[in-house]
Image (cartoon, rainbow, N blue to C red):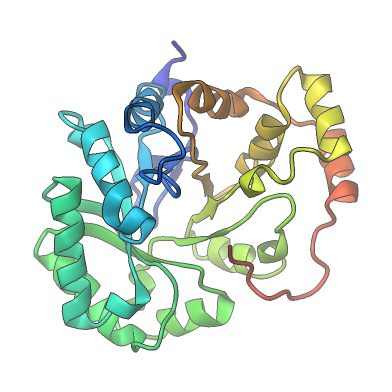
Length: 283
């Protein structure tokens, strides 16, 4: 078994270290894999040091949170749980109620990091007030956002308590590089790690010949090269989903892929970085 101690970490704004490679659950509890396989996959990831697990109340209408609960049974203290509130539930009272539902599904007393899933019509100040109350109650430890662009982040920072935002979870991979132009530098300057969902573009990027060529050179899979490319970035956490243990092990091995300067230059030619502001990508 690979040692859990070799996973690189990054630090949250308040100094807590978390692994740069976590586990996503989008698509779990929807019949793509058996429940037993999904639980085994998450437990395998924990054994390999991938102790950050990301989920949301939206995923399978709370079903993914229940899978997480089964996977972390008797191991809660070893896991950093991230979950999310839907924007339509993000009023002050609605956020608190949604958090309580997530806590029940996760069968835990606290959530480590609670995110607003994307921006809706409810004023951000209401959501932030709820986050603050949940912290005071010990229901959550940190809060953050998801799918927020620079203008949204600046608005958050301008609100009372807004500078306590812990992360921005966004779509980021070789084919979705828009955040490199402005959002990634903005967050990095403020020591806010970004969380990259769909880091291999749900597999759609893997047939690219340049990616396959580089993978062959490294004796790796294209998915591992794509994931290693995301993981090379400072202050970026990747949260790929894996529904079976073998896939988890493949993801973990991406940390051992060392891309050269030549590899990175070739990938830049194949997947050009942004040269101007782009709309924030979402799936």
